[in-house]
Image 1 (cartoon, helix red, strand yellow):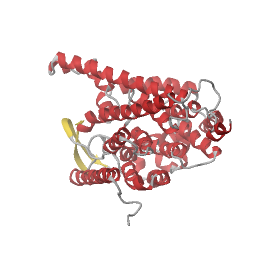
Image 2 (cartoon, rainbow, N blue to C red):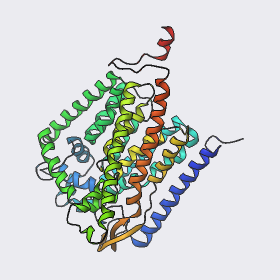
Image 3 (cartoon, one colour):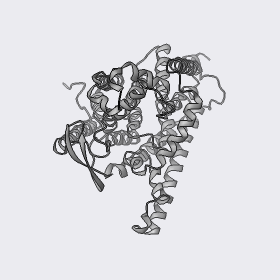
Image 4 (spheres, rainbow, N blue to C red):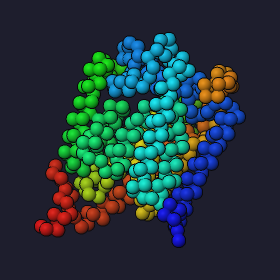
Length: 444
């Protein structure tokens, strides 16, 4: 008699092997940390600045100038949350000093991480018990989630709302609207996947999500008394200019090959070391990959509009995010959204199976540095000892964007084949009205 959580066929065996590889990768990462005293690339190079994204935001939640001095692109909600879960007396001097003082913040970060794992497990176990354990492991100790944890990034809060919204946990519409409100107010670009409800013609749900998001924004705006649309627009311009000057940071944990193009247009004399023909071929190839991949994602979104019953809301959210991520790098932690959506799929054919295997590979937590740029001696906050930290280009930085491209095309081809089969037996839905439920069609 087989146990429902143990592998029963080849698909489950593959997923268990992939899950085991994630655990092995975690072991390799822990061993590296034990030896060196710090987390290697692609984790944050400043090993003294662990939880940087939490404490830098929290500092301005307790001091003046979150938008005028810090030039934040976060919505006011971020400063409300970091302000509530923090000890004000710890933020009198510098954000780095707060780590050894504000224990509440660290407890909150760890609690949110645990909650990320819990909601992931609930979602996966509701959908498919046979693969739930390995997929939960892949998310929980995968590189993107650990990267978010090490940075203390509010993306973990966003992820919880994302899973509640797209994880088939069967919440009420009011709770889904609340989840969408937090999702959008933690990361504004997350309003894009919420639009998938409109593509599905679920206008009521989209309306409730929009109203809730605006209401939460106005409430937190009144609390912080800063963070108007004008503030955010001005700071966004500053942010884009700053990111354009940090090429190595952009390529280290990227969802796209596009940052590599910057090596040929800025102060990096790559043509002094690489043949011009090679660089030209690479440049053309990257542009073709980016433009064609975005195009196929938009084609699938349009196909989902025409045949909303064929394309699930999770796939629509996947294509909407991928068309953006394949062009602009939102940060390595954002891959948690992509891999979560893939893990909501059932392994029904080779195309979906390929995407699922890639999702495991993308979550592999360990990496290998192939080019070391420089070293810097400083105190590691995690190990509390002086370390000689290396900064360089890792193997995963070159492989991951390609894996995401293959994942996108695998799901896109599967989606278009499903739409094509539906085209042969049914007409597209061209209007704005919702599709007729199957039980009502039977009575027509």
